[in-house]
Amino acid sequence: MQYYENIVKKRNSCRGFSARKVPEEALAGIRKYYEDVESVLVEGIGTELKFYSSDSYELLKQHVGYNGICIKAPNYLVLYSDKADHYLENAGYIAQGMTLMMAELGLASCWMTIDDAAAVKKALSEDNGMEVACVVAFGYRDPENKEKRAPKITIEELCLGKDFRTEANLVRLTRELEDCLRACAHSQSFLNLQPYRLLVDYDRVSLVGLPSEMTNEADRRLNYGIVMFNFYSVMWAVRPSAPKWSFEPPERDLRLPEDVEYVASIRI
Image 1 (cartoon, one colour):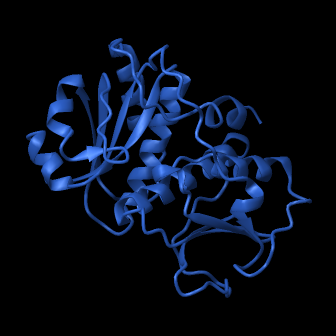
Image 2: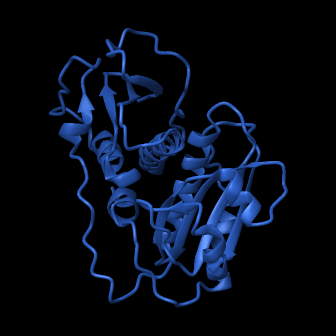
């Protein structure tokens, strides 16, 4: 499937950017994607996209970072959101679409952990009545940047069967569904811990969250949005009428341990 191979799989986090300026037409293309594409997880949550230049590094470095270190980049994407149920999952979903758009444009990106969202907003002198939901550093990868691609989980490790205590049977997967699951396995997460699993039943896939002491609540929610977008984007590439993820409670017993959280499911 071209969308998985050429776009999702191609996208790789970057922590070493060149000083090369991102052209205005590239920024306009990302904004047009944000405004035109129906890439929202939860309808009705207001969001606002803003770009900031490298000058904002000094304003951001005390409050955002990757593993405690703020990444210096030519540009920063900040997605603001109304505060509502699942607004962080929705923000992760929307912003992931934009990072894949960046990959199509030859740009690299890196999700940043927000230590203090209110402080970020104050530092940027914004007063739009919304929350800072996510920050992504982006630009062109430094040609001298030799960082290795971070290892990701395999679909055999990622997937379980119809419930948490059943092994997955991946032998009879369709190529479409297999690529959707591989896209999830390729999803970025804080420190690449990928603290979630997919329960694969005959008619649906359910996303559940695992406990992770190293992942804060905001990053956990953003992670969920990212992995849900990767799954849906690959499915949508071949089946635009595919149903979207739902946060409705599961209709069947998933036999989850007490410390495992049900997140959402999607019909397949």
